[in-house]
Image (cartoon, rainbow, N blue to C red; front, side):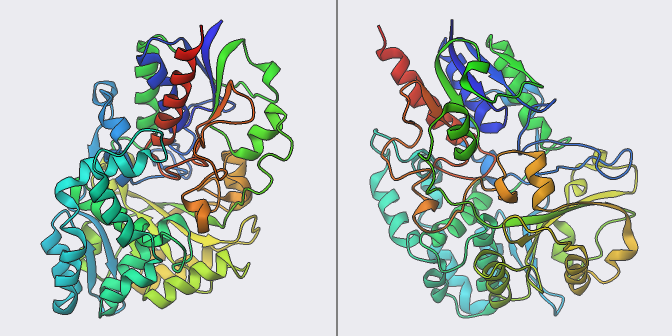
Length: 470
């Protein structure tokens, strides 16, 4: 009998399997798709030689992940590549605010009225970032935080809505960039703890950047898999699990799936019926005949570029997708330029470009024209560079990854109390009604992102239980 079976070979499932195998437990992973990866895969979606990331592409939480840092993933081919600027936020006048590794450069890009307030916001936390990141990404747990004073201070700043936090800024540049940071979790700007979301992304950039993985996000999943196999674990692909009886006998079962799928497979009935799924995205992958012709020079040097003319425009786009049930007229876009630092992702002289805008859950329309009109505002001539495009709306995203219910790439709405307390109000969020069944997906704390910490935290709950058994 195996000690543990993991269902789903996304970053969280693979991380949970590695953590258990490192502690001497026998582990097997079962994945429905023909490759590992979940939200961290790479494929030729447009033309031969253009390697795209169908889901996540830039990894500020991955490079900052306490779980990944504790693993020798570099020995298994994972290499982080950093653009000159982690992120830029261009404006219609051709200028840009930036999120740089340097706090000073970032503050200066906001203008003189907001440079000081920004420094005062981030500088108290940076010297203690490693401990804060571990405490923030590990809760809730039964163990005490390593630095409760800093965590409490962070909570006082971050728990209110981001709209409150942004009151300390006077001008549009800082407000728009910070609103864009919050939008990465597809949450309305006025939601609980959205200030913490924006602050975490900013601190992550200053501490370790917003890199891409050489060769694509698949490299993260492949490195985890290779490490797991060296530890004695096994991975089985093309193995769809429809009920617990489809799995071999084990002392524990760990699900890197949506709560909906877990309830169906394990027979939990309506246990997760109150769990909410949020807005989706419309994703485009481009093969380009050259770099994106951004008007702002800073955007040409940035790995990630946020596209939204103002805080109000970004807020309106989020509200349209999350609250009004319609696609925004001027979508807020998150874009990534992997081939700026990884030219092997495209043929010589060519580029891959990653873009998404927000749409309602389950939306079946086509946002391509709206996305490209928005890009043309900040990069005139963009359409002339397009060699090919691959589009994926909510139905296609859900087909690609079953955890994306209705196309929700966060595996559950990251708003309200559910941003912090997921998938249910519980001190033990990785446990389920069955004592031998656990959940480790992004539907559990700390939530969405390629960081493996949900898997790491769930593995702790699993090995504590296994060690209690006679």
